[in-house]
Image 1: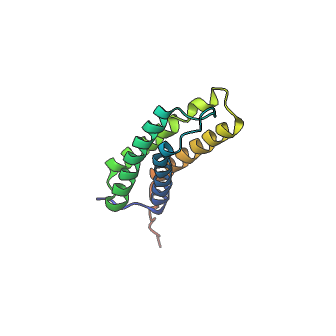
Image 2: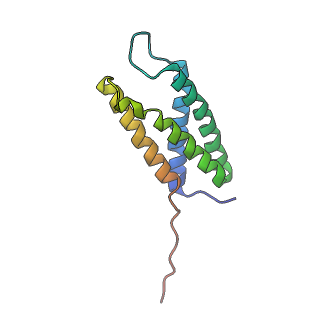
Image 3: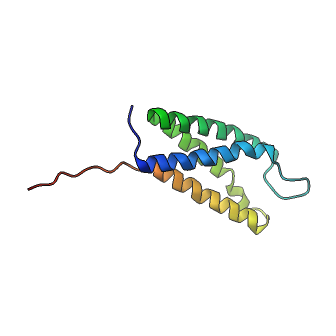
Length: 124
C-alpha cells in the first residue's frame, strides 16, 4: 500500500468528478431533434463512469496502483468518446464542451501520475 501525494489526490478528485458526471449522462439524453451524443455513447460513458468512480475510491482509500491505472483508463476512454464532436457538424457549444472535457481529462491524468515531492538532504 502506497500513500498518494497531494497532486495525486487532486487528480483523483478531478477523475471522480468527471466519472460522476458521466454516470448521470445517461439520465439526460439530448431532446429529440437536438444535437448530442447517441444513446449508445451515453450508456458506455455511464458504465465507464461507474468503473472510474469505483477505481478512484479504491485508490483514495488504499493507494492501489492498479486501481489508479483503471481510473485513468476509464476517464481516458470517456474523453475519447467526446473527440468525434470535433469532426462532425455540431454547434460550437458542443465542440467547446468537448474541448473542455478533453483538457479536464488530460489535467486529471497528469496529476494522478505525478510523483510526490521528494525531500532533498541538506548538506552542511
